[in-house]
Image 1: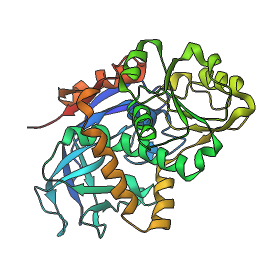
Image 2: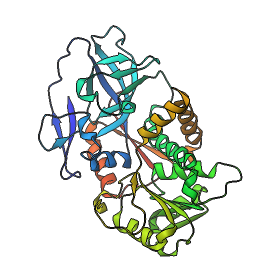
Image 3: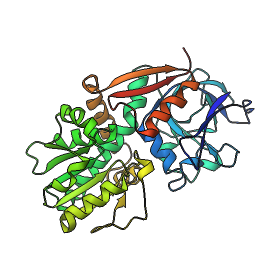
Image 4: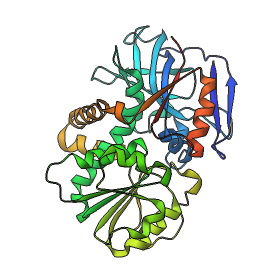
Length: 353
């Protein structure tokens, strides 16, 4: 079995390793990955691996080496669990590897959770595995996790009355999560707020082409932001840009939200900022809040409808690139981590078939 290890101290350094397949214990099942997506989201998982706990999901047993989590689809090839048959295909959270052994338990909703002891205290949304029969595995893996976060950000902003903001500024608007938020914010009829997309000069035309922002600005234009009540939603983690946004808007910045770290190499969590203190947005917390308020299944249904709504139009802003074999993942991950990947491209690593 092959797996791609990432140096937890220098996340651009990866090593492809062959390891023996772990023997199954009672009640376990072996899942062989068919395909998975690689996006800037995976870079965020690596960059915040210690702070948020993403390195804990798939322990490697090697000090200083971690497995970056990915979203994808796998097939049950061996099972000692009476409820999970060989041949079942499961969509969910996997290591950047060719297989995963889980301890499956029914979630009571037609799916399964990994009841492995080391995952017991980790966010439940990452421990669920959903049976899938057909459909587009590639679009699901590429868009469902990212657009789910986009929609939860939208729901959270509306839930908080946008913190009184007249404009919502999205940093790294070319990212899939960023463009998804722009599109969801643009949907309400008669909205009274403006949507401003911040991006690099090179990605400006791409973001403008989405047609979701009232205004697209490059990072070197931050000082020209309108001085009105604002919310900043930061997908990049770029400390220099964030500092300039805070300084430019001052007291008009009503909330600053940290979501992603696509610019992980420019992330400085301890930097002193003017005005409000940035708050980290953790999507599972908004899911838990809505489950408590609305009951189980309601927010999940909304998320599914929302990401499929945008996915139906994905051909206009997404080019799916399929790479064969786990060895190809190193170059794709490297391009994403270095910020050189084309924002139109959605990368799939295909391992079988």
